[in-house]
Length: 103
Image (cartoon, rainbow, N blue to C red; front, side):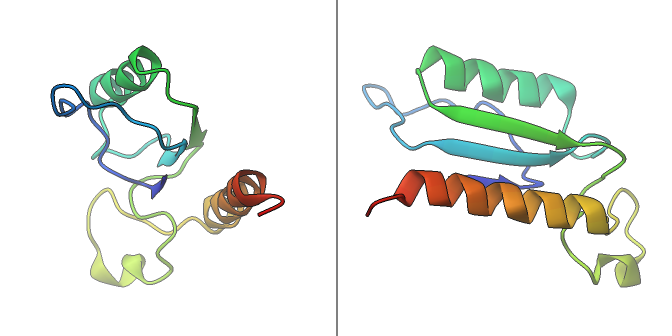
């Protein structure tokens, strides 16, 4: 699972179910739509379920940092960030290469 600037929280898992996917969450460190409390709850749930995960925060990046056209919308809290876009894309490529190496 790869999430770019997702609204992450800790929704309860279905009783008796567990998470088996590896998770890469790519977040804007200054995203006003992603609260620290929700992100901490999300991480806690991943830890409690022994999920193999990574959470990466990009400094000075807010919501929608990968959308090169978001600035045209003038939406508060959403802004393109070229460095975070490039870095997060590379992080996803590295994650997928590791995941599917040799397959």
